[in-house]
Amino acid sequence: MFLNSLLADPAKWYFLRFDSPLNAVRSVAIWLTLALLVAFIVCAALLKGEKRARFLKIGLISAVVYACLLGAAYLALSFAEDGIKKILFIPLLVLLAAIAANAVALSLKRSKATYIAAGGTVGAALIATLVCIGIYFASGQGAADSWLPNGNDDVNSPALYVCAALLIAAVAAAALFFGRKDKKGFDSKAVTYAAICIAMSFALSYLRIVKMPQGGSITIASLLPLMLYSFMFGTKKGVFAGLIYGVLQAFQDPAIVHPAQFLLDYPVAFACIGLAGMFAKTKALEKLPQVQFALGGVVAGLARLLMHFVSGIFAFGAFAPEGTPVALYSFLYQAGYVLPDIAIVIVAGVLVLSSKTFVKEVRKFNSVSETQARAENNG
Image 1 (cartoon, helix red, strand yellow):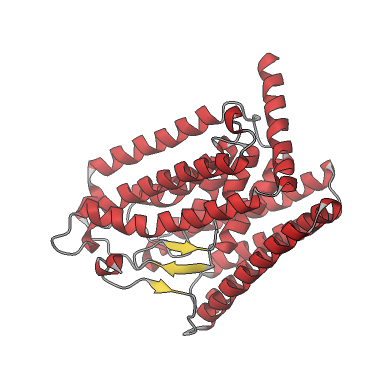
Image 2 (image 1 turned 90 degrees about the horizontal axis):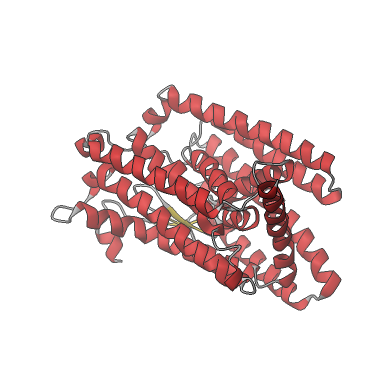
């Protein structure tokens, strides 16, 4: 592969990798997930009416529980192999358990009380997890555990600070502009779904097809839950959920050499995924939800690529082969995993939104948010 010729170390493929218990489980999980996905699509296509609606409901809850179980298994194996510290392992495990339990509870009974209880417990677990991650990196342990060199002078360039500030402002402005009609604030339902989608994306992020040597990977549609959340609840909430997810991602394979680089590669890059919902309320495409999602996915993917590209120029230029321009190296490296990863998500999202039953449920969230936002503006 041309990209591999630019890498100091080759990318790792996980389709059939059994050199450790963690990689063995990951390889089996990839094929199992693909098989379950195919079975789900076939069943959803064959079933009609009430049976399909019931199947989709059960399938959604099962997917949440399955993702949480996978995440718990990966965390346990990573902890056993000393790949994750105790201060991160315990809160993340509690978070996944809380989400799985509340997903089952919500499937049995949906009411304001259950949404409040779910949002409260999952929200508390999420906050505790973020606090532990903050302590981990603030103590310097995160940098000590990182495998990246710290001798790149370009990372201290004032241009990095300027670029980071401008890009953060651009993402915030885009979220505010495209989310201007969204419902203000997070209610219990929005919090609950945000936590569930964050956890599902986090768990699915362990289903890596390819892992790049200096960070980044191609997964099996790990960002789909986050993109669907943005599509359902709006751009502002989607960007916020992506930001939280980006912080969680920072501990998987910490590739951090500078605070500005950390912001661009983690919170801001994944906050861009929330832009996937920017076309969800475009009237001209109202009857084409697949196109709405695909267009938003393309924008979100390119925005994420831009964050990694700028970060790579300053923070990872030392890895560029001799004679290769740093900007070219950064673009090829980042595009080598970001574009395939987002393409997989878009294809999966288009397939999911091909279900009229699913689209009907999604539109409920859109219409409620739009109606309430209009009422607030008129009031």
